[in-house]
Image 1 (spheres, rainbow, N blue to C red):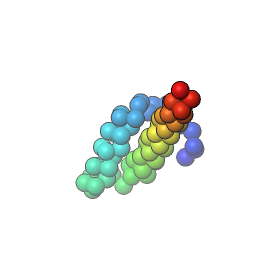
Image 2: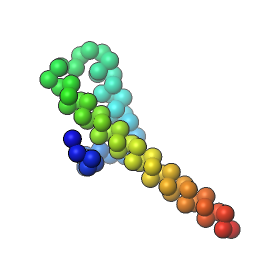
Image 3: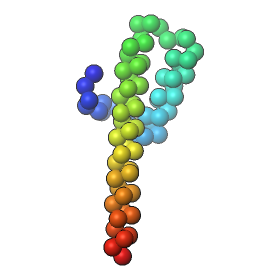
Length: 71
């Protein structure tokens, strides 16, 4: 798996919802062994996406707070 972000992931909330669905499926033992690796890879991509969105938000917040210091 590459570090590139998949283009089919929506916003943070959609990614989090999909992660919760994957987790529920994995916890229920209904995941086919053949699909296990696919689901884990998808979860990895979703987690990376969510972390990136959080990092972006943190950066933007830091910029706003920093600009308030100039006022």
